[in-house]
Image 1 (cartoon, rainbow, N blue to C red):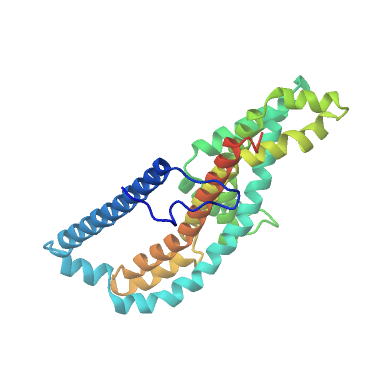
Image 2 (image 1 turned 120 degrees about the horizontal axis):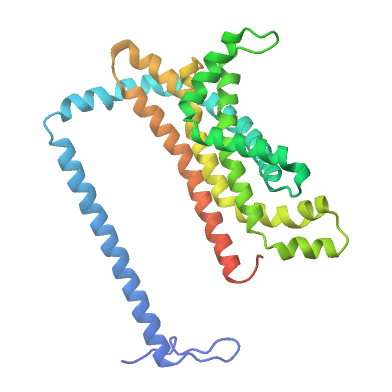
Length: 294
């Protein structure tokens, strides 16, 4: 095989790549192009087969009219987007509360010494109970049970009560994520901090927590993605979010296209967060492989 002058051109520092290296790089590029073309072709074939199977099924005309009506989609989209604002507000407020409460619960569970046993026991009971309790049951108990008590000064707003149920459940999950991060920090880190004169609280704040939080960022983002989807469950309390707005329109003519619109809107919101989570995870893996993080 012959090589052009540009292939054998020297770099600025005088390095001349060998002919074997150029041949290997050319082979790798060819193989990468072939793999990309094969993946694109198989994807197109799979998509075409699925399209033909679905559109040629006996019930497809009825399914298309019931679930994929363009007329109902145009009718539902403004209402669904209007309700989506409530889901976004719940995500921001509940997400912040979940992170704070989850971190406090994790710290309570990792406190040492017999004097902290009641605090550890309460935090353990909380996480065990709300992690085991289905979210839908927690929502029903809070949304309908709290107003039934008729307590003075306690709100009956379904949005606040539904958000409280989300916080109760997700803070238990997030607490375990934080606890895993705290316990993943080697005890020598805490011992080294104490040997430098830091108190136990200072060692936790300045040495342990920064490392622990950095390590659990990917699973925390995954929990936020799940929280974003579950904000739609507050519709069972009567709050007009994206799901309930779709339900109102679908209930008029029993056409379920608004549900599809609401689902696609949630998917459109979830995909950027998922890709961001993947990017953060890959970035942290690269830094860890290079020894950039402890």
